[in-house]
Image (cartoon, rainbow, N blue to C red; front, side):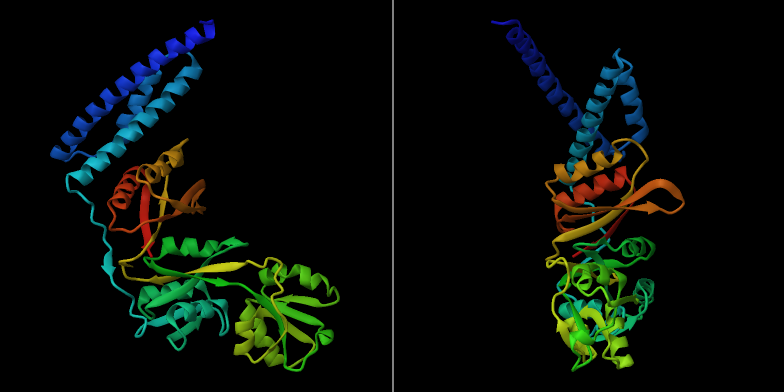
Length: 376
């Protein structure tokens, strides 16, 4: 046997001892968990755990080993907490959440608000989710839509939250924190912009093109082929289409959806002019009621974390230990706290599932200001 093989045998013996001691430790943690449940003690004691990390790191000599044993014990403590959260579930403490399960949304009698002008993609998303002819009206800003829901002027709002190429709509994330409104549904709309003008217009007549700045950029390859056209930014693509109708000038065209073109009676001069052909936007449906559909499959939450190393890592482990699939994470700066962030997470699940309740319990214990934004 070579020297290396002998060393590996010794290491294997040490590993066997570690495994045995690990199981012994977890058995004791299980007894501690039952004691906490019987006596109503909290599972998570942040200060006690900090003291424990300091205690074990002081028992080793080198700085490298101090860091290593600290990381090992952070994992030990995190695993112990997860075991004890599961014990709460087994003991019948399912942790009922303040959301009411419903069979369906009352789409027929609902009043819907969307942001933008007639012909906006938000209107198309609203009709896709609630159906054509639904009772609706529009407002100028996202904030006005959220206020309408909060005040009860509308039952639901349809708002964009994410574009497949441009990314998150940051204002919506901030408003979800500011207002006590909740997500109950979502729908995804393909973004296929056209060049549209007055009926009878030939593309050779165009001199000016109007649209939202982002829409102009998303069609840059097409527009670069017409470098002599003046590009003018307006608030949104539907407003651009409306302006073409109002101006009644064949030298003007809009980059807008075919839907907006039809609303304002324009002719499509060039179809699907976006650089990215698979562009789409995800819209969320918001209400002021804490409800969720019984067949809901996605949960959105947000929380703040201590400004400490590995704090996000340890929180995300709750999804791993409860076999939950995290599908999205976003961060937004926290107002008044430089370089501190609030995290928004989407994951698969339903609020009735024990694994979801278990994960939310752990996240609530170990994070700050956790909010369930909706199950949909």
